[in-house]
Image (cartoon, rainbow, N blue to C red):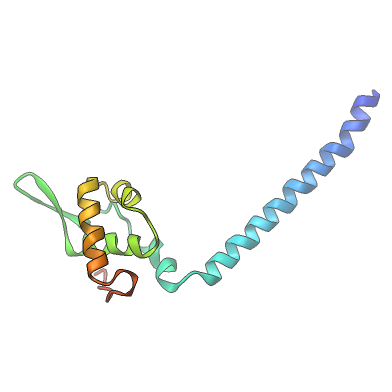
Length: 117
């Protein structure tokens, strides 16, 4: 056994200990976030922004259903940007911008929420 190997063993153990402590800390932070998140954000995982039921076709154009509009609004409620909603909902930026302005006009996070039936 060389002296370099002997010196590396304590360093490797220290790195493993640090990595393990970081994993425990991140798990704790995740737990805290789930406990402190508003109920609306906890339910965010219950809907799929790319669900085909969020859109309908009119003459070759896809439009958002009432459910799709509510999902956009809930994404904005959760703090998502118009660019994030564009990507998540697979809509144009113009459509996301239009929905953002409508969400603001409806009261933003304080607007009445619609059911996602």
